[in-house]
Length: 243
Image 1 (tube, one colour):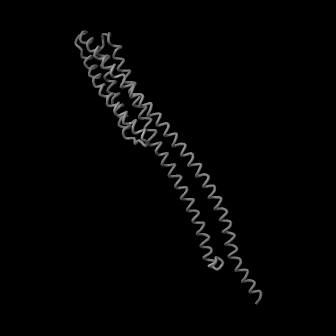
Image 2: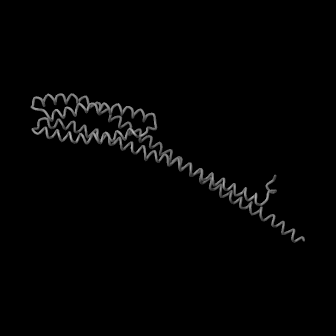
Image 3: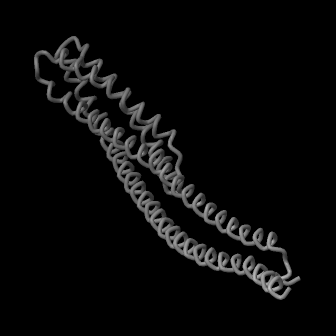
């Protein structure tokens, strides 16, 4: 059946149906693009930024605790060593609370790349070793703060130096993993931003093209509808003139 043989109502229905399909396609394209960009932004804001914050907190606490560890040597020859070491112990307890909270946050963040998962596993191993060595160091600080005489203090400081020499490589290795994880996070975040920009540019092109096509089609359909309605009326008027 030719379209000219259709009634005016059916022609109007087809025309407006075509416009409705185009509107749905534009809406679907907008929803797809918005959802894609929203998911990526949510990943950046809810995953990548918190991961960097947790890494920064852990690394900061690592350096603070290490500084406290070295500060113990500064009080070796002081008379009020017990008071000074008790102060370090109090600071250390607060530091461990901050460190453990940062580590718990770090564990909750999902890793979206194989490299990230490998680095997280390596960091977990180093973190356990780091915490374990500090159990010995904290115990030695407690014993130093409770030392009964200078001879015992000298012996404990010698032991403390040995444990610190074992701690330093563990702390350094953990610091390198922090750096690697931070760099990986920045790299992945930059890649996501590039993808988002490309998606936004792609959406912009398609929206402009679809809008232009819709305008052209609307004009053509308007012309077609007008012609479909006017032509029968003209023929009817000509027939009335004949009679």
